[in-house]
Image (cartoon, rainbow, N blue to C red):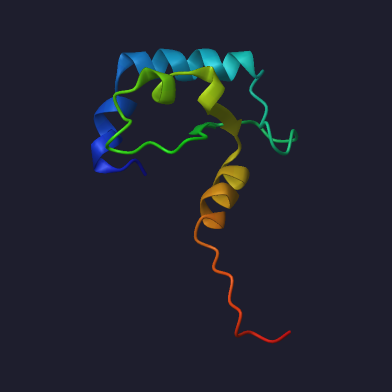
Length: 89
């Protein structure tokens, strides 16, 4: 789900056009697992209130990656993984 500061951007015609052309450029295939249809255009540099108006971040193909929902979920779950030194294996 898009954060409040990004909702207007994700509804913009500029994003819709960029997203559609990016999916076509990647032939609709997830760039990580290469075995599922890519459905989510992911920003490698996450969008923030500070960069939401920077087209080099929001609309540049260099900052985009086509992912399936599984790979996208894995990407965002990694961000919350915590390494604990006190756990013994």
